[in-house]
Length: 475
Ligand code: SAH
Ligand code: SF4
Ligand code: F3S
Image (tube, rainbow, N blue to C red; front, side):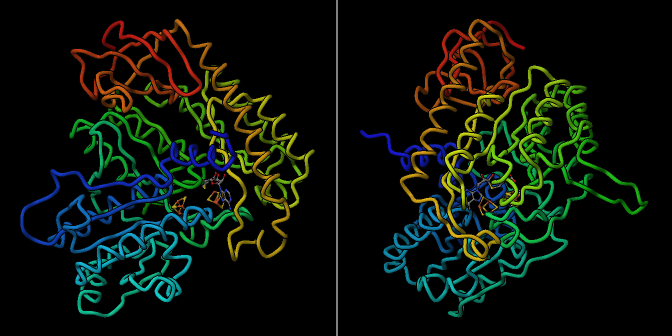
């Protein structure tokens, strides 16, 4: 099959869980009562939000089903980051149409970023939708469902300056019982010119650190061994306590790391303009904070970065990488790259490849630029890089990244890593999988070991995506 840019991009998106369907596990399903079916698209934050949504609905007597045909209420938690993310949701709504024909009383709600972006327009465009609910309105879901059940269409797209859902205990959906997300903040105050998130998720606000630490303790007590702290820009986390005491991200990271030595801590996403030495020093100080940073660069060209309003340039980015590596030489780094942004020339593109060559990321999420209506870029500049050029540049970026990942992984041959076992490998259920401190996936025969165990694994074979090995001892 020809390896077209679009196909490769789809693959990368899948790896990022874009478009993956998150179904409620069977044990949350109770006989009788009303049933909720929920699918999530988009980023980890959206997956984490679905767990809040489930919690709110369960409090109101609902239980989960992963069978669409059994559902009284169907929610799709949507993403608006690129046009293809929205297209996927529209295709799903078409599919729901057929089901609703057989069960006309079934309520269909569109939640999340696409709901927030399109608001009531969505009701005009998609006739089967009964509810449109933005990311800050989930406490209102039971009321909205009641309205929809009575035959009226229900909308709440109010964006809040305060809502963090801090007091709502998430219901862990589709969980492996080992790793979990904790949202530490919501919204985004940056104005990257290509990005829809500030419009779909509103102003940035940080969650009470004590509720975050309490959630970490609760997870440990329930057998979890890894948390990922989530925010669009974790480095700007800021909490002011009633006594006027300030907690920044480095301090929060320390507080969570101290929750339990067996609990691994990861975080996403860091922003190159805000990441501080203190954060990297905290990573170095605590063994259980993973030596891995996702630091989206978007472009290697300062001119493009300026138009993107990323508020850093190429040199600044490379300086941050140098700072990080001077503190933790063995750090693992990943990034995001957008190909074909407005006005991107071949020289700009070459600079992106050059920067990648310099940094040699372990992993990257790579996209073609998709113009989002209403964003500063859409208002100011033409989406003037033609599709074939975008695709070609994306293919080149992917090819280079795949080479770097393969070469970096090859250097791991013969090394031993501490791995947290997450469960059976998808490709070969007889083997186990788990990640090391670097966020690299390892696959190995694991007789006698269980998800949640830490083991030392020796690497015997590598690809660009996975390390294969054997357990040498418990860790
Ligand atoms: N807050 C994170 C990014 C969240 S969106 C950060 O600032 O890094 C995840 C990624 O989607 C972005 O890093 C960017 O690479 C990509 N993205 C965002 N808007 C896009 C658009 N309009 N077209 C293509 N890719 C986009
Ligand atoms: Fe979007 Fe930029 Fe905010 Fe990330 S930091 S969510 S790219 S506006
Ligand atoms: Fe998509 Fe919204 Fe996340 S637009 S990437 S689901 S914040």
